[in-house]
Amino acid sequence: MVHVVFDLQRNLTRRIGLEFEIVDFARFFETSVVRLFVVENKSRMRLLGGNFMSTSGVPAQGVPAQEPAPLSEVQRLVDTFIAPTKTFTDLRRSAMWWAPYIIIVIVGSLFVYTIDVKVGFEKVVDNQIQMQPKAAERLEKLPADQREVAMHRQVAITKFIAYAVPVIALIIYAIFAGVIFGAVKFAVNAEVKFNAVFALIVYTRLPELLRAILSSISLLAGVSTDSFDINNPLATNGAYFMDPSGSPIVRALLGSFDIITIWTLILVAIGIPCIAKVKRGTAFGIVIGWFAFTILLKVGLAALSA
Image (cartoon, rainbow, N blue to C red; front, side):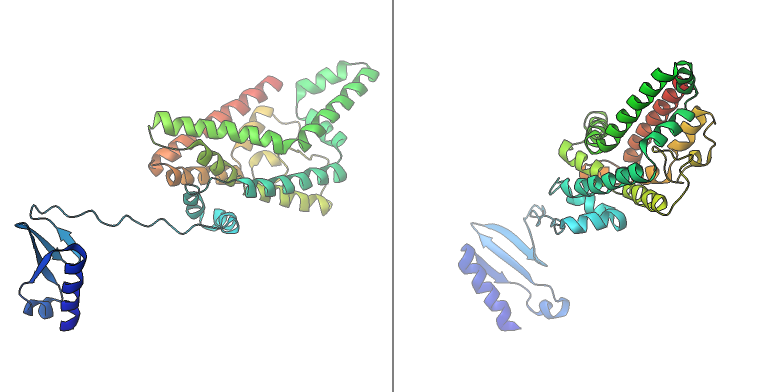
């Protein structure tokens, strides 16, 4: 043990050209703490427990904390469900979002194809019209030939939009990310990068895959399509259980409180503090504000069609 201490003294002396004194060497064995005094040009520094301190008592700057180990794309995808803070923290290192987006595109396209085969977009449009009294009334007033043309046009538009959802989703993601970015950057005055926010929004959409997967399974299993709603295909909210002739306003209100939607919003609130210096409560406040806005928007649009 003694020769180790003297080796330490000699090595330090050769490296930094300072002269060391060993003071009160016996206390080393009593306290297991090495106390060395350094003398250089009548300036004295003390080494205590491995930390250097000047005579003014100001500690030297410590070693910066190490960043968490980088995650693979597979780990990011899995951790979004079981350990979301790991995935969202890793977005500071890399804001890549292609992996979850590609999965969303594949699963979403398969879901739309299942609807096309098992339900048919003629039935999809017919069910939508039944839930919109004004649209049904306008259609009924048309002559038979014009009504048929209008239905064919609406079916074509609905089918095109359904298959174009991956592109439309990117626009929606960008709008949502812009709102979150603006709230964090300007309202809260915290430093954040837009690409990290956008990646966060894409990753937090992954739970929506469950809606598409479970809905596809139910259609393939032969569930009745008489009241199938392409906008609300799974029993994750109260609107799913409403009669098609029920109030569109009530349907929009109940449909907003969807289990999977709330899950994704909670993930966004968890993720904001991981990519920006924002308190968790503030993050939840931002997300709740956005949620309230979307509810008002849906209810307002439903009121126009009621």
